[in-house]
Image 1 (cartoon, rainbow, N blue to C red):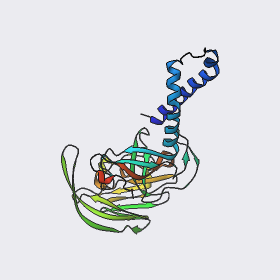
Image 2 (tube, one colour):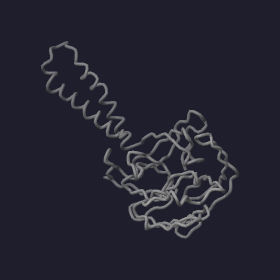
Image 3 (cartoon, rainbow, N blue to C red):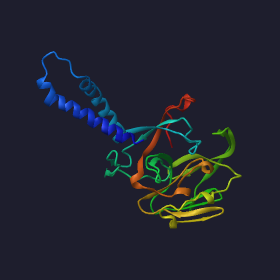
Image 4 (cartoon, rainbow, N blue to C red):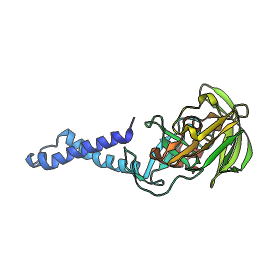
Length: 267
């Protein structure tokens, strides 16, 4: 569902009805005559829709985390806020950038439109920016020849959908200026070769049994989930073009199951 488009249509319809009433219907209406119900509703809803539309389009937009691909940074059920202007001002609906502010950096947690189905919003961590060479071997990341610092943080067990018990190892990783936690499952392959698709610019990547190496093309980004062995990300469907960027996640504003998470910043 294209919610911004629905809001835009609602904004235009209520605004047009209000204008028609001001310039055509109101002058002909007798004093004391009640406004038509459609006009009354349009006048009431137009300002509200306008404010929400502007806030969601240019300032912040709320999202709910639907999967565990970003655990332990983000949990299923987290409600987050996304900064819509940090990566530039974009026209709503068509997502065309009109004012450039800054580019995504390695380690940012970013919301974007899934390249294979732009109606879906995904959230992952930026691992590679244009020109970067990403190597992931034996579940360790190297960016531009530099092996990322990691530190073991003990075991992390959780139950995923279908009541499947997962036993993982937690570790702290430094990606750019971001210090964050990741999960790996020691007994799973580094990359599921059978799931790798023939995505655009696939020739920028080389896959093998213990990992892969990719060079990020210009105007694109390489994304990975913090739950490394339970994430459908750029390893499998390719690079994210700049035009698909939605914004930078920065705050958990609600979680019905764990109130302690409310107000936590997203690193």
